[in-house]
Every structure is written in C-alpha cells, then in structure tokens.
Image (tube, rainbow, N blue to C red; front, side, top):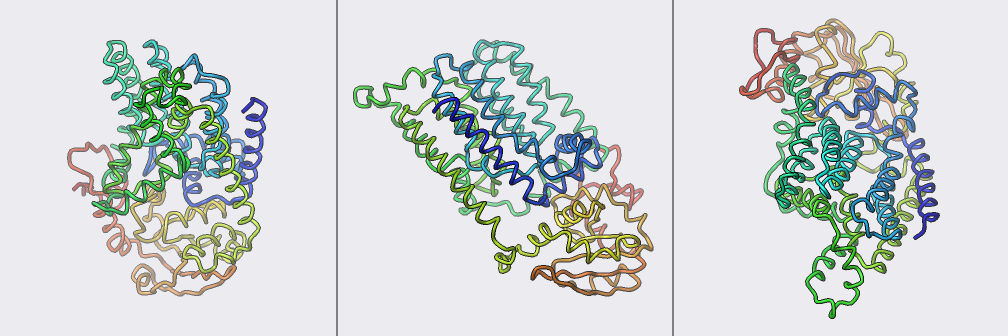
Length: 515
C-alpha cells in the first residue's frame, strides 16, 4: 500500500458515490429529514435536531439529490483521512504502511461503499468518530484542550442521535480503567460540554409533548422481548458491517496474544505496534458492540446503529495484525468493495419490472416513478389536500411534488413529525385526495367526509388508489382518530414536566396528555 494507491482508491470511491447519489432517488427516510430542513426548528419528533439543521443549511445553496447528500458522500473519505492523520498521534511508532492500510479499511468498509443516504446517522458518525479520536489523543497525556475538543464533538453527537450516550459511557469505562485524577477531570470537562445540548433538548421536548422520549424509550418498543432470532441477526449484521473476516481475525489476534513469542514468531513481529494500542481505542472498538449484543437479546439492532463505531474497530485491528495479515485483509476489502460496485451497476441496468413480484414493489415505484404519479395527481393539486396513510410514503411523495403531503389516519409510532406540522382544525370542510398503495375500505373514510369515492390507476405494473373525500368532518376525525393517537402515543409520564403539548393543546384543550 502506497500513498498514490490510497489516493487512487479515494478518487475512485468518490466518483462512484457521487454517481450513485445523483442516480438514486431520495428515499422515504431521507425525504422525511429533508422536510425537517425545509421547515427548521429547535427540535423534531423522533430525534434531536442536528440533521435538520444541516439540511436547512445545505438547502440554502441547492436542492438536488447529490447536493443534499454531500455530507454522507464525502464521509468515508473524510473519516479515512481522519484515521490516517490520528494514528501517529496516538501510536507514534506506527509505520506509514500500517496507517495507509487502516485508512483503506475505513474507506472500503462494506457499508461505506454504497451508503449515500443522508439520515440522522450522518452527523452522528462524524461527531462520534472525531470525538473518539480527540478523546484518545487526550488520554495520552490528560491534555485538557483535547478533552474539551472531545466534549464539544460529543455535544454535536448528542444533538444528532441518542446513541451518543453509548460513546459517553465508553469514555466513563475508559476512565475507570485508567483511574487517574487527570482522567476524571477530563471526563468532567467532556460531560460538561454536553449540558447545553441536553438543556436545549429538554426545553424543546417539555414544550412539545416530550416526543423524543416517547418515541425512543416508549412507543417504538412494542415488539421487544426475549428472542433467539434477534441475536443471530445481530451477529450477521455485525459481521457484514465490520467486514466478514474481521471478527475472525480479531478473535485469532486476541487468542495469540497469550502464546509465547517462540511458538508464534509472526506475533513477535508486531509486538511493538500492538503493545502501544491505547486502552481507549480498545474500549471504543469493542464496548459499544458488546452493549448492542446485550440489547439484541430483546430488540432487533439496526445496521445503521453500528456505523459510528466501525472506524475504531478497524483502526484497532490494523494495529494488531501482522503486516501480511493486514495486507490480505485490505485486499479482501478491495475485492468485496468491487463486488458491491459491480452488483449495483448491474442492478441499475435492470428494468423496474424486474422487482414486480417483490413485496415492496409499490414503494419502489413510488420512489422511482414520481413524475408519472405527479401526472395522475395533477388535477387535484390546487384545491385538494393531498395525503397518504403512512409517514414514509407521504414524505417521499411530498418531496417529489415539492409540496407538503399530510398523513391521514393513525399510521405508526415512527416518524410522526406530521403531528406537529399539520393542524387538522384548519382543514375542516376541505376536500382530501388520499393516495394509497393498498385497496381501501371506504367505510374507514365515510365517517370523516360528507361524500367519499375511489378510483385507481397503474404505474409500471403497480396499482395505486385515490380516495376522494369531500367536506372533511374535523370533529369526527378528532374523536375517531386523534383521540386514539393521543392515548397510544402521547401518554406522557407524570414525572416529566410539560410547558405545552401540541396534541392536547390543539385538539383536547383543558385535558393533559398524561399517563
């Protein structure tokens, strides 16, 4: 591995990622967060506000797909450069080739090859990795200014997603291992930096029904419970996210640590580099995944939950492996990345109808054929309220139409920011066009409109239904839908202080949203 080869890989991956970001339509999750950016606020329903702020800033200069995705397009390249820059400052004896291989592993990690989708994890990954690198640098000599940098970046992670708490906990475990007075002071500095971010989130949530708390700690866990399936899924997910050989190589590396050098001469070749690995790097590399393993006993772990900690694990392994093993791992990553690229290029040439028998085909058509859908909805865009029955679908359609599409009905516990954005009182008497991907039951709509009719149309083999409801009956909708939403998703615990709550203040004045 040479600097020129690394630079070539950097350029090639960036070219591919820019092409993919420009070619692939905005997904439902992305559209949901883009609407946050187009209507910025101090907070949003299900996560802290950082991604909304980033997208608000990006939207000032353009609204094309590749531009709004720019932070995630550049992410693998920037993080690989950050690891390359940080390693000699953490392990002064590290060789140039080992630094380059570490950077290559981060650049070509499986998810980093294809992930060009901007979500709440995008700023979280930036802040978490940079905060972790600053923390490791601070731990070398208990440097207060590096602890301050780690803390400020940790605050950015806190404002991105609640999984930042895992990073903060890893810092605590690292301090417990080191036990020095300087380490405790550094931890206090880092934690203190997060207090303004926590205060902002508490202030906004207390005036908005505590939606972040309700979503992340109450409403989304109805399917939680002991399971054998979820740990197995987690093991497969972790193996893929880190790269299939990584867990095996990490286990072999840990096992050989205890073999005498005379019985393991290849291990002796790397004693110098391995013995210098900061304890903080070991903690950051493995503690988060152990915590997720414990959570996987009762909850399915999302692939994206793991991405903030992957660079630490790959850097840790790059410092432990023998030069030969490290080169072989790097070559595997290059080959695996090539397979990903080839598969994506092949799939991109297939007609959309290839996936017609897939369960999600109608959602694929909704994402890719938005111009055809726009033509079908054109007669209703001026005088009708456009709606869908799910949050992801509504956000996708609204982004493509460049017009906000509301959510009609109860929907799910996820992505309920429409509860903040839409006031159904103001829509009393209006006509609604509700687009559906499944055949509706008209009785579900007749009680909320004076007159209801339905028709359907087909796009690329996927059928969509238009429910046309005239003269919206808001009181009936409040009692039939919003009352159930309030009971199901806004039963805020009594111990949480509230200064206001949009759900009860709008629709049920004089009644508190309380459990």
